[in-house]
Image 1 (cartoon, rainbow, N blue to C red):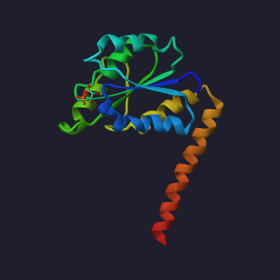
Image 2: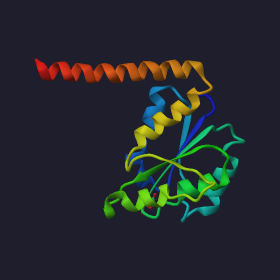
Image 3: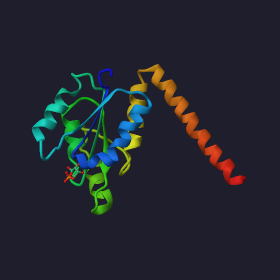
Length: 162
Ligand code: RP5
């Protein structure tokens, strides 16, 4: 496997049920990536070490998912110059609204590109699009993916009319 270009991290292994969709999207596009658990609250120094070393290790995008008091994406964004995509992970209480608001409401100067609650697949696809801005091969694959998506809608439309 080549060196990872994307880091997929989460606050707890319990987030993997949601976050695996990000890793799966990256795998579909054969984007080398790494996965790990880095808790902003339980392992703060380890999280900071990851964030401060990410760019130097060759990562280009970080996808960070967390639930509840979901500080991981914002804290990682504070400690790296890389683009950070935040995934609000829904927990049993509050339907993920707490996760969403914790991630999306960042102070000016420290952006986190927040996807929908549970939107890990879109986080993976957004990371692919970011990488594709400087990677013609990846851009071609994204264009083909979008054409397939449109085709699948047309097929469903046709099936409804049968
Ligand atoms: C957050 O606390 C994690 O991102 C997770 O969504 C939530 C609960 O973690 P566990 O108690 O399941 O480890 O930091």
